[in-house]
Image (cartoon, rainbow, N blue to C red):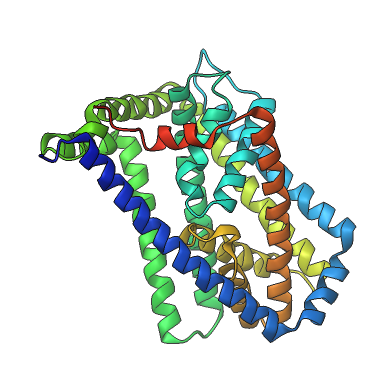
Length: 355
């Protein structure tokens, strides 16, 4: 059979997924080893002592700050929904919690995170409207996050005498971030239909025809909705961008609070470096559930450079991991309560080929 065979197309998609799953298993295994190493290196007693200094009240504050961050993401998403449709915080915040839960728990959670949010509000807005509004908010979030990570990277490079290897690595990462930011802004301004053009190119050459028969048309509609939003509501760009700035500022505030509770003298500079590295790790190691091990490694790297100490960095990362776990449990409970189907979400992301 030719490459247009739906079964062959499904097999190709399955093969790509299997490769991602293998990569996720390998990275997660490495992360677990790193996590155990840091626990051993710092010492269980010292970590428990650090957690004790945070206490239940301190952990409650951390949970509340993270909840505020999800409210900000939900509010920003609501602004990205075009008329005549609308979403309130009552709609968006639970959906954001669900998306964050899947992104944290499942090794390939980043693939279904955005879709799960759209499915969670499908009774309020059509699925394509939900998906396009999420994509619009995500674009602005990615832009703000890229700038935030770049500022952190530049500040780190200029403040410490790092080894040449680390300088080169950070320089390359910064270069990639700035390139992606530039291309993203140019894509929106010039309204490049990159996704649908890629789908058409593959379809015309006989690749994945079973998936792209209708998918390429949906991709074009999806892009039109996003670009149409920018044409109709240019005044909403700054409020959404401002929301993302507040989101990252709350993250920095959380780190400052934890450093203070751990007995350190917190500074906005130190907290910004720790939070920007955490954001970078979140982006790079999306395949690792709960960022196990890698988050501790990043925090340890920064706290050592700041002469704060490995114990503080690892304890801080563990506390924040506990915060993620708490809200992931809340997200799972919301999924169960709403009767959402992971199979439905998966079929939207990877629609089955029809005979």
